Image 1 (cartoon, helix red, strand yellow):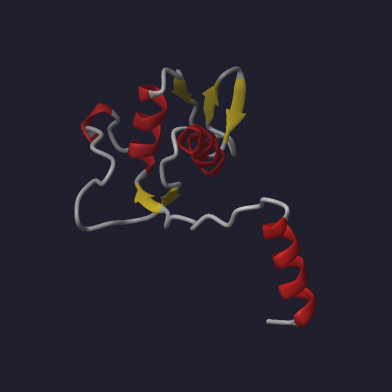
Image 2 (image 1 turned 45 degrees about the vertical axis):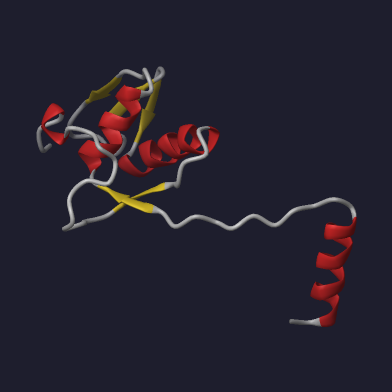
Length: 103
């Protein structure tokens, strides 16, 4: 670590700052992200053939945009962030994926 960085960190901690451990992202499928948002009370609608095929809260979103939106809710609930990805060990979100058929 550079001395200037060490000094900045020391001043940050002296002023009451805290360093928190960043939690690893939870892999989730597109359907799990949608189900999570619906579980948060949001209405998500799909419109095929568009770069931003999802409508939520009167705004259009891409899949990545929905993940960012879901992560704002997860942050408020102090949950690990989501990331789109495959996982072979089953769902870690405990959300029934049959609620949203494959798109």
